[in-house]
Length: 89
Ligand SMILES: [Zn+2]
Image (cartoon, rainbow, N blue to C red):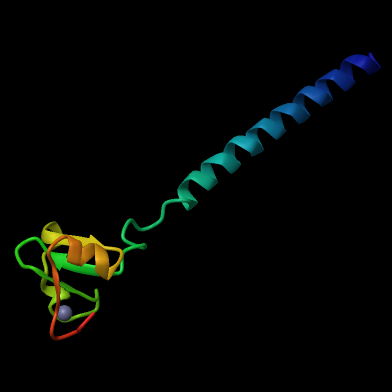
């Protein structure tokens, strides 16, 4: 009788453990979603040849669907973009 009870206890413990592991995984997957533009420093518009700091007044007028992001000045200039004269990145 004692042995049976011990087995049930072990089974219950294992179930609890697997549940906590599963819920832990679910929590991690929701926390690892980072904003996609976090690594980009400069923004331009597909309709112009200028690139800006994201906080430039002109950068903020670019429509979301026309935004093109660069992680460096070199990257922007290689793509044929020139620095904006207002925010001078
Ligand atoms: Zn600008």
